[in-house]
Image 1 (cartoon, rainbow, N blue to C red):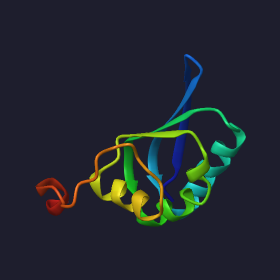
Image 2 (image 1 turned 180 degrees about the vertical axis):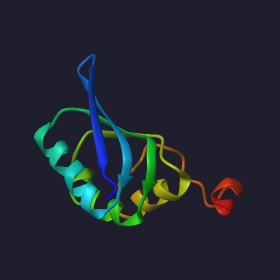
Image 3 (image 1 turned 135 degrees about the vertical axis):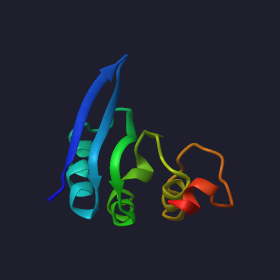
Image 4 (image 1 turned 30 degrees about the vertical axis):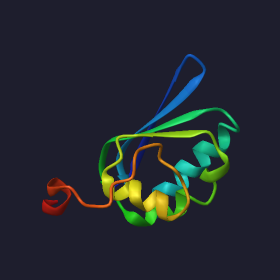
Length: 105
């Protein structure tokens, strides 16, 4: 069974959680617990090194994100849109289309 590794880095008072592996509904719960443990601190979620990112993970993560100071790094356009559908801003400019790379994937 694939899993998720969460690497925590702190720089200048900002916590970065670098995610590696598979993010699905089960491992997203693990990530939510890590976010809860950080309290109200500013957090950067780095999705750059994920091998697989299931849409079901977005549903689990968005339950608590709207009230938190969270920045996103390394999201594909599809997942940016998914977060916005659930009311979470990713800080990027919305695109109304899929890129050729996303269509081929």
